[in-house]
Structure formats: structure tokens, C-alpha cells
Image (tube, rainbow, N blue to C red; front, side, top):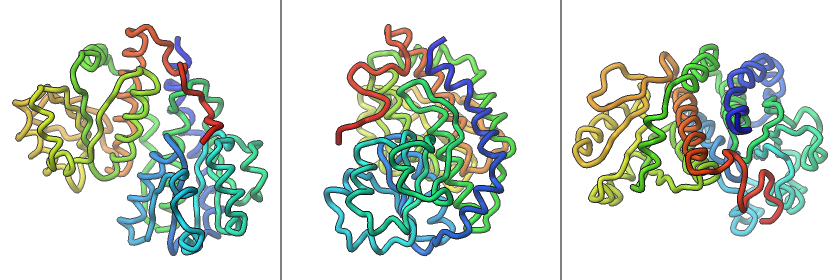
Length: 334
């Protein structure tokens, strides 16, 4: 069994472990000022933050999710001072950009919060315990983030829900993850291994997951997956259908489900189209996952479907899933 597969199979229990500490998380979050919120990180950490940023914006909170390296080089300190809370997200707590960001902005430490899986990290040493939120994901072996990505999404949503007073039911999420990773997806891995363009389209709370999927296909299977937000796909990239690509969509029940179904009708005869959905009535080939989950959470088991597929693709291509060729688990150069 590959290290990536081991990590993937441990995700349900990792989520359960995190949810068991939800009262502690809510208590620590009470002191945070959510007048204006910034989430920042790199790679999987950044993509995980996009769900919470969208959730907060839909709740009326001014929230943004921005890449840390770009903030370091292209954002002024005066602009950073406008944020009431800055979430720094890093699984390792050791990435080059994270440590530089902290060292460059030490006067902002009182408004910074660290989200990490490593309480002994270099970054954690800058913060008191009440400003460090642990992912509780356990040891993650592979380069491609699985447990830490999912737990990052869940942790930030737990914090956001506690601050906004909006109810999110996480209780069924671990079971839905288990269902997703138990599916026989060899046929999907075979389809995605073909030498054709592979395109993923999502909207809303699925955008961060879609961005993560693009990264995962590169890290684990060493192939390109093109990702577009749903409406943006119509603004030009739809011409990629001329070569009849494989198109995956994520379409959970929610605000834009009808718009996505309209997209399905418009493109289904121009590509091999598969949708990941919890809608029982879809007119195109579907992978049914995330039953009963809120739109905010529904994209997580859809990500697990893609994880399982990409693990098989990597093995079929002769790669050790989750092992880097040129990349490393912790990036120490900016």
C-alpha cells in the first residue's frame, strides 16, 4: 500500500479526531476579531482556506484568501495592518514563505493566528498556545496532502461557523468520506490516464477543492489537470472542447446547481463528461457522493474521489504515489 493511500484511508478518523475538539476550538476562537479577515498560505494550505473565506463572505464578513509569497513581495505593510485577524496556514509550520512572512511583520503578531499540524514547529514558537490551532491530522507521510488538507478545511470552517453563529452539521462528513474512498474508481482512473486534456469545473465552495485537485494531479500523478471556476469556463476556455477532452464537474445541491446543470446540457455532446454530485437527478454520467451534506461541505468527499483516482493513475504510470521527483513535502526555498 502506498503512503498516499495510507494517508487517504486515515482521513475519516482524522476528521473525527478534529471534530472531537470542536468545543476547544470554539472557545479559542472567541477572542478573535472577525471585522476583516485574511487567510494566507501556500499550496494545499492556501486552497484549503478558500472554502472558509467563501463561507465568511456569504455570512457578511470581509474575508480574503491570498498567496503568502505574493503578499511578501507585492503587498504593503500598511494594507496588512487593515486586517483584524490574519490566519497563517501551514501543515509543517516550517515553509520558507511562512517564516519570512512572520519575520517581516513581527509588529502584526498580535493579530496573527497559526493553523498547523506541528505544534513544535519553528512558526509555532512565535505564538502563545491560544493563537495556535492544531489540525490533529496525525503524521502525514506523502507529499500530496490528504489528511492535512481536509482537516484544514474543516478546522477553518469550525472557526468560521463559531464566529458567525451559522450552524454547520459535520456529523455525517467522516462517513461520507469513507463512502467516497470505498468506491471502485478504476474506470475513472483509466479515463483520466488517456492522452487528452483533463478539465475540472466547480463553483462556490468547490473552488478551493478544485484548485487543490489541480495541485494533487501534478504532485501525485505527474500530469496536468486544468481547473476553471464554473462561469469562467464559459468565458473562452469552452473552446477547449474542440479536442473532445475529459471534463469533470463538481455539482452539489446548492445555489448554483441549476447553472451547472445548464452547463452540462450545453457541453455533454462535445466531451466525455462526468459530474460528482449529491443530486439524484442528473442527465449526465454521475458519481454519487456527499449524500445529505450541506453545500459548504459537499466538495470534500468529491475531493476524496479524485484522491483515489489519482493514486491509481500514479501507480499505473510507474510512480510511487505521494513521493516527489523534484518536489519535497516541505518547501524551504521561496
